[in-house]
Structure formats: C-alpha cells, structure tokens
Length: 194
Image 1 (cartoon, rainbow, N blue to C red):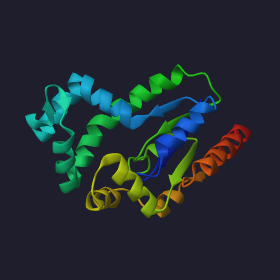
Image 2 (image 1 turned 60 degrees about the vertical axis):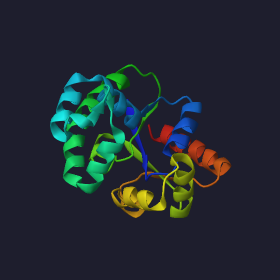
Image 3 (image 1 turned 30 degrees about the horizontal axis):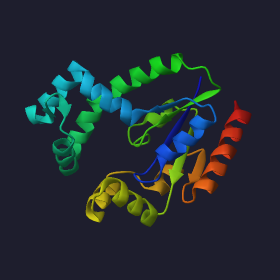
Image 4 (image 1 turned 60 degrees about the horizontal axis):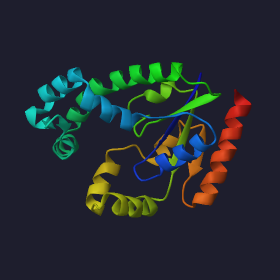
C-alpha cells in the first residue's frame, strides 16, 4: 500500500484538504484524532501520562487538554516524552488500519509528520500551506483564541520553508475552489507514479 503523508502548520487547512481527497475515494487516517481516542481509551497510555504529568492529566477519564497543553508549551521535553508514549501506539494502530484498506493509496494526516520522523514511513508527502495571516485568522475564528497563543503554537512547529525541503507536493490552501483543483492535480500525479 502506498502511504502519502499529509501535513502542514496549524491553520493551514490539512483537514479541509484531507476531506477533498476523501471525496476522491482515498481513505484518510487523521493521526491527531486517533491519538486522542487512544489517550482516552488505552489504560496503558493513561497510566504513563499520569506518571509523566500527574493525576491532573485526566479528569473523569477525559484528557485534561488545557492542563497538558500548558505544561508542554512551557517545557518541550514533556512534549517529547508524551510523543514517545503516544506515537508508537498510533503507529501500530495506523498499520492495522492500512491493512484493511482497499485503494490505490492512503493518506495519513499528521500535524507533526516531520518533527516526529514519521515522513520516513511515507512514500510521498503533501504539505498544505497558507500565508501566516490567513492561518491566524482561521485559528482565531475556529478556536476563539488569541494571536499570542497561536504564535506560541506556530513557534513550536516547523516552518513551511523547512517542511517544503522534504515535500513531494505542495497545496496552497487559500481559496477553496483553487485548493480543490490542486488536490485533483496531486491525486492524478500520485496515481501516475504508482
């Protein structure tokens, strides 16, 4: 099975682009969504995260996202330790999922595909980009947050320039109609290469 990684900075529109590929019949694995499910349902992950962050990591069996987000943004080593707990489980879950798919290729959408080295398991990588001002506007509307918080998240991620050095295809996601056209073009190019 051909695995295509789909990534991009926060607010770039990865999920929107993933939905466009899904409409073309391509199975989509949203790693962040699956990681959240595993953090909620896996007793092993829960135990390890409580050991790392303390019992406040969970409230009523639900991940205490604000508490964890605050801790990892002030201490990058905690983020790395959390990723070391969660990512191997997500990788195994993804491998099982891939074996059940019947399509010319699958897409694995991962926000931190490069940061975790996950791109090395992909045959191709698509990076979704958008101008910083567009990403910031989207995030302020979507998450009802501040520019300062968005800036802090962006500073913890790779820049688009750094991502593009390891990217096979780039989709500039500014205008939906144009994005849809780019998705179709990339889809055709991938089909020709496999």
